[in-house]
Image (cartoon, rainbow, N blue to C red; front, top):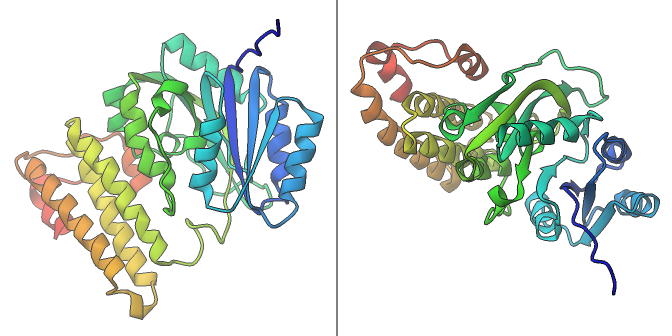
Length: 328
């Protein structure tokens, strides 16, 4: 009788597309993990460069590596394909141009299990395209365990939003589908993922190395696709309101206003009154209507941690006197 193969403890999913310059560094950092009971699923999203061959070469060298070759459909389709194939009890994501500390999964899994948490999350190092450190760095998390409600109160913090800086127990991803054709796919799915968890284990250490690219959606030319961020952030706002986190929702609204204003300013003039912009404006107005009653009824100052205010670059706002300035 053939012995059934044991499922790995962790499945690590890497969507791959046009990153041959960085892919080996990413793969090597995962294969060098001090925690070894994992499978690495490389999803070649129809990459036209040498990435498919690099993926196959990695699989030949290490039996923990599995490769999926598919027609190009975008990062969400690649992640969804990896999720469908994953066999691990825990799921991690790594972007193919980034890399992780060798203790990343050992520390993340230990933190989650010790806390009885379904999610673990850590801080990250921001790198330039050449691998050098960016001038801008942040460390919004401290080592602690958050309840679901506490995590939602801090839902705007970058490590909580990014799939790659989280380790997920398999059940919190049940029913999760990354939205196809949308940018900011992490922000679209974050509220539902956190709602599936009862606790989040946070690690202060910077274990994930995130590479910034001038041409990325965050730092490149502004297009109508940038407006996906408005829709994604509305989901974060709605989640905060659902759990009574009114200060968080208000700050989210302020951020959405700034996103829309900056995007419109940098769009080509002919696109500034397009149907897509009007849709984003309608989403913002809806958010304002939902947040306004909760805040107007409270004559007080926002009770948000300085790290949140700093990240959003929003000063402490006295709601009774300054609300209109941000909501009109």
